[in-house]
Length: 130
Image (cartoon, rainbow, N blue to C red; front, side, top):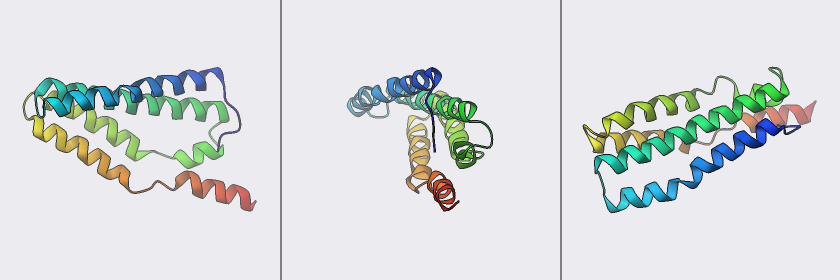
């Protein structure tokens, strides 16, 4: 779905990879201190930053290829991405009140992403048929 990569794309991808690289660290901390507020909040911060970094990467790709490009059509409104950011942002402060509920929200985000997202596949199939 992407025809070219710009410098901005590389930086946005590196930004996403940085946040993803912290997931094992906060997961280990959370595992050692299950349902403690600070590890739950830190886990949420890393997930939120990774979600924001993914959102930025998608916007950089769409801007580089134009609003009528295959990647723009495939991404569409990206409701899953927007809902994920919102839930993470709500769960972080909640972790200091009810850490178990914040973890349940993190699990809920994972659950909505379990169902495979076929948007890019559909756009590429349509592109190949033309």
